[in-house]
Length: 493
Image (spheres, one colour):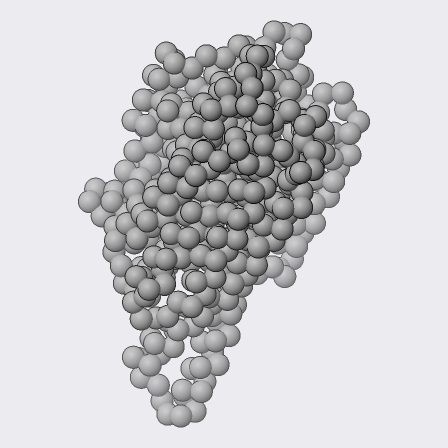
């Protein structure tokens, strides 16, 4: 429960500020260009420093790292809530992301090493999967409630009591064997610079692609530089004796497949959060609270699917028999959203789509996380957990930027063409222009979500072809840190 609470805080903080952003922008006098940094500063630090955060846990112990992350995250949240300038808020959000990069891998690593019994492990990963999939939606709901009834600052202050409860619980309830000096891996400083630098460059390029476009020189330069740094990172990891990311972790076919599925699955899901937030508030005119509550059925579906379906079936079925149908169900939900209209269509289009998406993602997340973190040596469990979070964060950042670019460019083309046609037929009045703009926005959302649907189907194909691990055997787990999946048993079904 303590691990789940901390993970929820990290996941929901990526979206809780979204609904509060208009209020923060007005109070701190941000420009439309600079407001993106409230979100980007967090994701940039989070995605770029995850590998380093995971290795820190292997060096000083996961419980200690977990508690340091909690304290740092709480202090950064308090600083952001008290921000009196946009620069102070941006800095606080970057600090939140940095401490989240320490906290998230430690939380998942503790989960992996604490629950070794197959039945208990299934329950634990079911809860974790529900949080991984539903935390973003919970953040939208919480952001709507806090912004509408209190103040946007409480979207940051709320982390302080949550972190305090988790810290007290971790002190008394969590146990972790700190590695002896001889067992601790050395910190690979060149790997830190190359790996974290490459991830930061790619995530930053994707964040800048939204206002600048993918063909911008800065965006292209950052993307090429990031790829070059990651290539140098891979080369260095194959030669150093103390790698930041041991390559055997991602060379395993099942683990690599699970990481790819995670990265692809969150593309469509994060894109949907962005588009539906604007669709509900801008097109349908929902209040922040009503827009947040509109995501509640999807959150409930994710929790139900993760805890009642995935958790019960994980020990009976091979992982791909959960991941593949889950991705197909989620893709079906996304496909329904391509038929959105400017008229209110929540009950007929949005609600069924969200339920299907939630059910599908619940089936995907838990086996993905379990396969990706199983069969790893104890000394590498922190960095292995970090790769899961990295796949989710980088996949979400790249996917959101890609789909948002598709949506905005498609919308602009649609609006320009239809306004020109309306002008040719006679001077369009304000009502006509407003209608055309809304139709253009919805049209762009539909095209982008269609791309997200295709990416989700690719995730289904990857899950079926690459993740060939068998279902775990129902036998006692003797070693203290025995994995649910023995890497030597990861054979084709």
